[in-house]
Picture 1: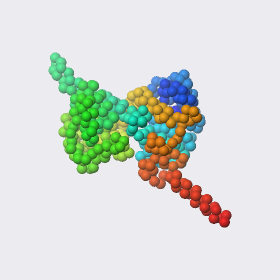
Picture 2: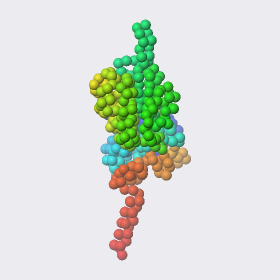
Picture 3: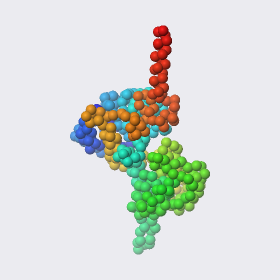
Picture 4: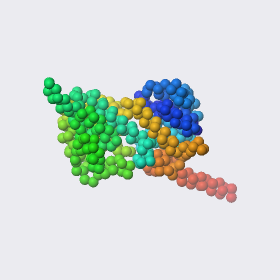
Length: 401
């Protein structure tokens, strides 16, 4: 079994899917590990470090991909690479809800594609939940970026020259990223308030020393995977109006509301931004997928009416070494979960509750039911292919008769 780790295909991506410590773990399983030359350059990890750990370094990307059984990256392979991994397994973030052409290409090349964002949220899967591990780092980074742009300090200071009040931080969304943002801002001495549509997370917010903003939205809740349910337009309007006062009084506002597989909700409009104090900062975690805040631009820091709007994205990539470490461990745990030690083989078992959800395409068809319903005309289901083969056989039999 040969696992390949090519360099990332996204410009500016500093993370990678393997550290030398992981190479040793794979080797103990009996796996051959190959990396593309320069894989760890952005996290100051040399090719020599990978070789010393037991990996083989290959400069020719085409050779690397064609010789592998499994290919692991963070971002999805460029579509031009998929013909080189025909019939193989790939593991990465795939964004299957928003890229039909890519899912089509996966089917056409009969790739068994594991989508790391589709790993179920369960006790069994915690060790391989890359979405959560990267979101946790994102929460930390968003506070650091906001602090860097804010013209004041975070903690209260009592000095001979006077007392400086603590910065006020308002976090919207108390998922993994939001909770980490709350904890980080509190550690830095800010006065923190948070809101989430799931009232059941109020105790978690309070346990971190923050206030929970109470807004009566009626019937809300979360999905079986722990994500917030989408609000109705009426509920969104109630939330916008109720949180406006808290937003305008805050020095920093961090929005983390992302609905898995759907466009993020618009939580802050231009009118509310106009009411904020000049010098205030808004960090929009969802800027790259549509944005929670009107006026944020994906990948940029802009200014509106004296308020800085941060929508730079790739938050975990700002702490690339730790992000690589966590992602690499998540992937190793996924692979080791299905590693057949005796046969030295990675088992594909679509009846397993993890693979049933995480595998998007297999053997030329969309195997994930949710994605198949989204793209019913992409590829074909196994049953459809079987029916076609049966029809062809019957036609041939009639011709012979």
